[in-house]
Image 1 (tube, rainbow, N blue to C red):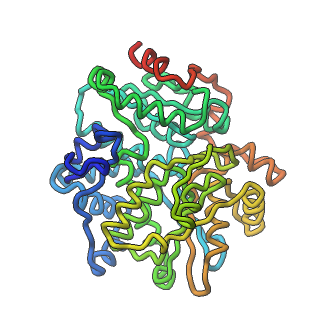
Image 2 (image 1 turned 45 degrees about the vertical axis):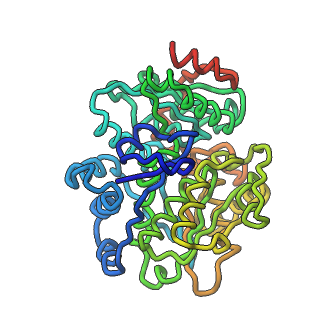
Length: 426
């Protein structure tokens, strides 16, 4: 597999290099040189396969002969050891539930696949995973790499800006997992990570790698559950499918669009954001004007400068698609609360991120279409806000209950690169 740097097309790397480096020169994202495409016959046959077999075929189409198919399938089986069920919410709408993994969030798919790939590629060479999280990435990455030999994981997150239960899920592990509460927002954490990757001494000394959605292995893993969703739908729903994706850093939407590029039948996508609406405003006006990030109920989407957007634009350019065909919506706080309550009346308990996607979908769905929205996290991960919105007490699943009473092991740090550098070299 060959990939090129979106900021410097002359920098071309293999899959192994892209996974190991994370970012290219000038903090450029890597993008596949070849965009494979399956025939309609292939797609029909693949939709009959089981999740692991189909996912291995999809990933092999990108990775090629860099990893033997049998070895890849073994790694996929280890990574995707839990289901991604489609659950009906109403006659013409369903939720793709991506929160049945160990940390109850969609990022378990990408985090665990990346851990498998890095372990295959690096063998026993020491590596430091440095990543920023707005909530769910941290837990998924921490649990995916926890206890792995020769792997040090350092996770930055905005202090006081993620839910208490999200924090407990990954800041109580210890061992090879170090968590850092930064005085600032997610964008400040992301900026610190990028500065670290610009520091050649740090990169060489520590064998730095990022596990954010900017890492190509995470992105490719996410393509697989879009196919899994369609495989569970009846034929009539597949023919008129609209998918609404709750969007923060835009990795999930990028993966969905890559699934469509492979030949998956999706009529259109909707990019659903909260008040951090840089992309909806851009699609409306043609001007890229990020504002300061604001804190919302759907905090994992509190991102004003989404890192994956250049990949979306590159895919549209390569496929000669029109950006105006991409649906979009920005859902405010009051509407988010109302959406959680409306879903409850339909018999479905949801959390703010999925509620944003559902509301955007509900408002855009045309007669005859079938809507799918992504449930990216278990409602109990946002227990405080969901309890308050619904006026009831959600029970905690075992994964959260066992950590709720544990002490946080995080260190506090200012949003200052010198302070981070000192911590990394300690």
